[in-house]
Length: 394
Image 1 (tube, rainbow, N blue to C red):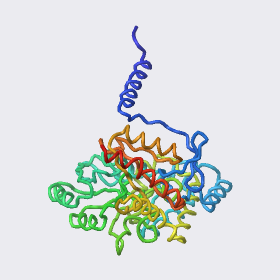
Image 2: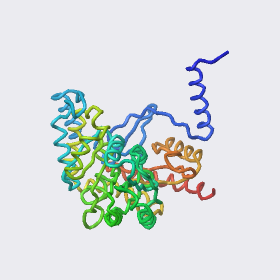
Image 3: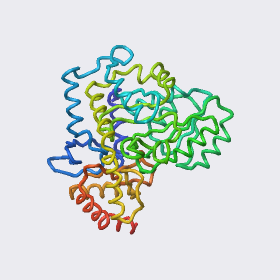
Image 4: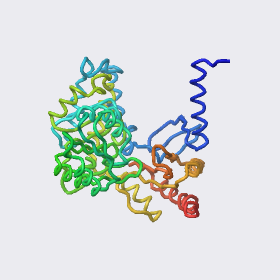
């Protein structure tokens, strides 16, 4: 019997799923009800979440929620159209002004998400005949945007400035324009890019530096301004990109840059031109969150302080961000460790390839301002007594 197209499609999908299942790499969506204070509910069980990127717990902040509710009541639910048609609500200008001020930039343009931002920004600036150099651990959307641009792509070893210099020396002169891209804080390892040194290297080679500060804004740098502000002075990063969905607690992406660059992006970035604008409530929530961050700089330091308490209890090096990875290597071992912690009342998701390189499956612990110190101490005890000994034995 000849199979229909629908049947061959299902066969293809099922075979792929079975192969992933055999490698402990199949992924499933699990309903999770997030609440205040880093609490989550799954299957009716109360869990303390240590895997959420809501670093400042602002998605649950009363001022932020009130701003979203009031904006919905006043302006409605959706923005109605692309920002360039009729969907450019006045709240967007307020939000962009707040972000530009935070990042000490001339201007800002807001996108529908961080992924959409990178998929739009990089192809707007780069094309065939240009050169992009990317840190090997850059977020997937930076690499996807780079591929979409048509420019030549060279990958440099993680945070290896000597390798970056060598690639620039070898290839820069053959390209018209050159862009260096990197995460500011790396999402899976939690370490910081040496953005000050990178900015100097890029400037020496007439290259533009773009940092993805999704995991930096709100939690690192002076007053939580992000990875460009981790040194004594602001690093000379001309393209500061980031998201509003993590420490800011809302949703969306942004680029802070010069007015000319932002105007070009507004004019040419396809993911902005052909996407409906963010809902007014989302913009209002982000504005309220940024205002809270500006007036509570001590609060912005809490997530890293909580992460340090955890690593010090385990005898690990101090982290540079609220992200602490514990590499276990094997995907099945990682899933088993995650299941054990969930049984004990903690939600810590196992991260597996292809999100991380093969052989580096890990538990990724993320710390928030509202985590209870007693919960952190007990979590550290569980890791020390039930996970670290097994890792050492292997």
